[in-house]
Length: 522
Ligand code: SIN
Image: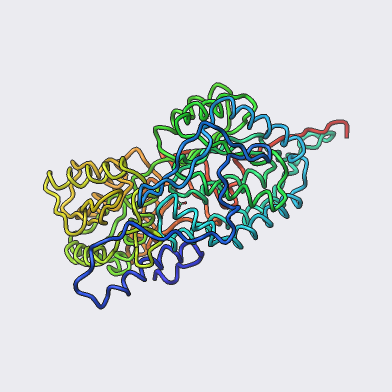
């Protein structure tokens, strides 16, 4: 069942990590639980992709004031980048505004050609881009390569969409008048992206923005800015003109940079991926100049396994969905509800597989799961495990903090609604199992959250599949399918999980204004 769903390189990478793990340890009854945090960092084939400077108006900007970027697996410094503030951001906005004058006048075909070149260069440099990504983010090299392909797919998709931004002719009710609509780029876009997908969260937004004819100022995650800068180097090689793409790097002054992007009247739209708390703040700041907004925010995804499900497929589904990126994606399953009749079987099968995972540096070949991003993330995961255990949760496997930012992937059984995981997104490798009796009961639990990003369930009953898919309050539902992400399909949430859709045939809409033209005197 899962095999039939493998339709994208990214999905394949997610599932392959799981399959390799299962295969590798299938012969061993005594899984190795030690881990290796150190690794030899592969040498880049093209070291000019590793830029130690911000990028504004096609200039590489350095500064005396810098912040450090660290390898989350070892804590060692990777490099230093300029600590930029509000004034630097204003300059980047002005550069993007100047560039907008000519970029917005290019044809869809011209933008298609440049995005397609950017796609080709990204794919051709996959290994180096994945090396940079693993180094600064910690995810395994296999997953990083999957992310580069996933990220690049947005350039290809939106290159193809650039030539299809059609308007309409509206039948007229007045004989002497004709009505048409055309679509025009909104203008300069502020793009604020997270550390968990240092490449793909940029390409998903910037691909759409550039295809529409907008220019951008990007503020990448402070933990993972090098992936953004490598993309700029390739954009320049692709021939994307000066000022169309700008990257402001910052760590300490992130609030100042964010505020300038949200309040400067030149910026016409903010596209943000990150926490709901920060999203609300950016939305409030953007309201003063009535900007368009796209917000892809937090989740608290339920993953429901009904008695009639294919249990092995559901276990594989949890492995891929819950533990992808070491549990650090906003669409990771957070609450796993398993129906009474199969609960014990499911729990033991899942614990057995999770016990075979191996944490370590993302560059080590036998690592299945990398570190968490930082000590704050470790503290949250520990708090969630301790809270569950103190309230009667049973730790079936893992959960040990083995050093640095490494926590063994864990399965906790006997979860209840009183535990922190029921209400908060863990953003880490903890699968909490809740037992339920009826469909009605589980739907109530699943929807009892202010979030509504992703939901998953496994069942072989076609009636139930329709019913549950319709009733789950989420922007995306995986029915017997653990990975939802692709450039072809709309990504986004409802409730406090966000506003707008990214990727797909809808992804460019948020970067376009519809203009209605009424032609009289015909
Ligand atoms: C996210 O975690 O923010 C995005 C996940 C995805 O694109 O699959």
